[in-house]
Image 1 (spheres, rainbow, N blue to C red):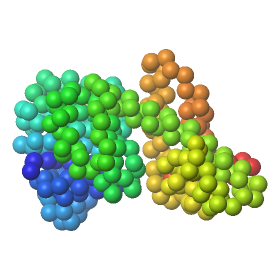
Image 2: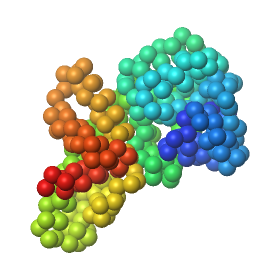
Image 3: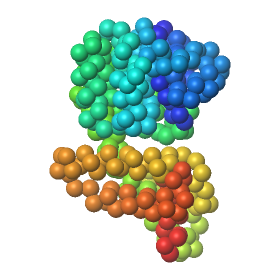
Image 4: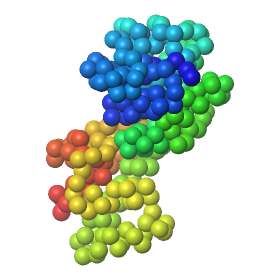
Amino acid sequence: MAKVAFLGLGVMGYPMAGYLAKGGHDVTVYNRTSSKAEKWASEHGGKAAATPAEASKDCDFVFSCVGNDDDVRAVTIGDDGAFSTMKSGAVFIDNTTASADVARELSAIADEKGFGFLDAPVSGGQAGAENGALTVMVGGDEATFDKAKPVIDCYAKMVGLMGPTGSGQLAKMVNQICIAGLVQGLSEGIHFAQNAGLDIEKLIGVISKGAAGSWQMENRYKTMNEGHYDHGFAVDWMRKDLGICLQEADNNGSSLPVTALVDQFYKDVQKMGGKRWDTSSLLARLKAVG
């Protein structure tokens, strides 16, 4: 059993922290809205703290899953941030999808203070978090990774060390780049099939077992066919992630024409009122434009 803190109890962090408690760890949580932290503590038998610093004091591992670079900085090096109380030899694991730059910045500060840092963004969405079956892409040194992996395993089905600090965030960017093009292709395919009068159930039953098959196809075709999008990974979040991808592509000289185009398609979905719709709502845009 380890003494653990979890900072940020959104749709991902809330169940992730729950799996750490189920794994037998002593968990203290912090959330900007304190009532949510208190609710989590009452459900899981852990403790709620008023600040990241209070939650992190004397902990062996501190996890965070917040919104963006600024939020990560706030819970680490901001007022009453976790870095002010973390003990020597502890490990900070950031599950936020953020930039590789902020990972490197915070890792350098952690190193000066005598504790470890891992950037460890996740993939699998809300369902993956609720089922304890996330994929975790990690950046950091091997010794720190080996120390933290048994604890990360509590909420993951796959955990991999991608390379030095920042590599976890870079791997997550690749993940989002691949998903962006894939979902647009799936949306176009279903749009075409609907207009052609094909039976979508029969169609997906066949092509999902061939070269076109994917997680998105298996898990999203039914709701897409029915026009239901009030679930899953929000368009606002995807645009945030794609913005990080496009900025990093500018930095490293990569050409991402499809990613840039799909990002603009998601902008159209936002204008349609779909800011919180699932990313599969690209199909709704196709129907709107004819």
